[in-house]
Length: 325
Image (cartoon, rainbow, N blue to C red; front, side):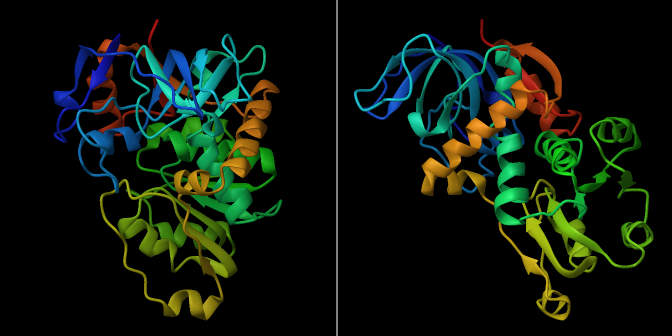
């Protein structure tokens, strides 16, 4: 079967489309005919050797996909051949067929397209876990989302709208403002051209933000640490800036706010039943039109290098999807 192979951690430029043997599902896995797979910043980090884990090489990248079940392991009870599903996995999505854990797969409701389904579990799963499970965000609270036009960021903006939260969206260029406003942001801050501290003070009447949803790390999160309100929750989601921030611990002490780590993938590994229930919830929200994944473009599998470069260069709004067939 056709698959994209990463043979060494040298980035997207050395990915190659190859012929490899079809995988076989373990007892708790399903085998999927892949129809679509999304391209995430995490995928780009993985093939570049910059993520916190390194799969053994060679490996097939792709952390999220959708398609049709063709076989199931002998311990699988939830799925059968012919079921339309979406799944998440650390690797394997950029191929004609992949295996995925039963606990990390979800059946697609009628009317949900493969392209849309392939963009939900990572983006909206991270946002849902952060906002609902970790921050326990309450209707009317102010949430500041950085990287708000990216995959996870835009999902957070969309989910905040659904949950009745007030969204302040942080973007790195003015051309992304219209998109995040269309997804529910009441205010937009370009942190490359505006004074973040002054804008947040102005928007919140000097009180600060209730929930900080940070995808960037580095200097932006260090500034956010000084902009929290009393009892707020500051959540590091990722470090796409490439810099791990340093936060003086007197800041959360003075305002009694919490710093809450968010690693949705590790949570899903540790609590698979809870993660499966969340995935079902997200797919129902998608089927009902209550969340609206934004697909920047759909490309053939052969253009995976171009897709990953676009993600790395931050020219993507929402997600790029690779179509397999």
